[in-house]
Image (cartoon, rainbow, N blue to C red; front, side):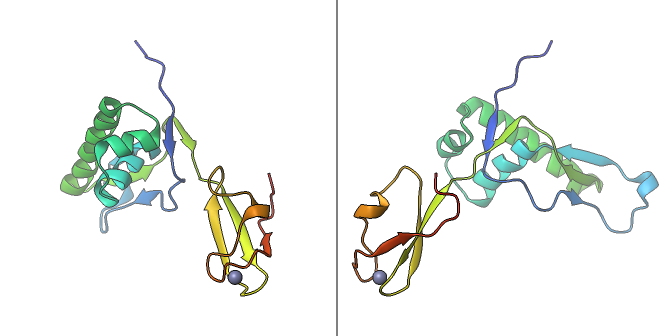
Length: 144
Ligand SMILES: [Zn+2]
């Protein structure tokens, strides 16, 4: 009985993917697998302190799904802390949802700034946020 899993969007892959309790030999160490989407629920709700509706929106899943993943994540982390287990972060049905940014530079005051794709004015219509100069250049490498 397996339901097809809905893809969960996460902001980025974690840089640290393994936590190990000190002083426990590997042979007697239990390991917990925290999935990347579970970590993302912890990051959004517990670390960034966002409302659950906001979190679910960011991951493009329903609130009830979000809640379910969050509970599972909390349980695993609690288990690791209470029982001294290692945590391995990998897996999960995920899609990296890194917001693409457009980068600009002002020729007059040399300041640089970036805005997400699909927002703001076109590069040619833009003026510098600092000095209001119109000689603004797009400087990101992949102009899409
Ligand atoms: Zn400027």
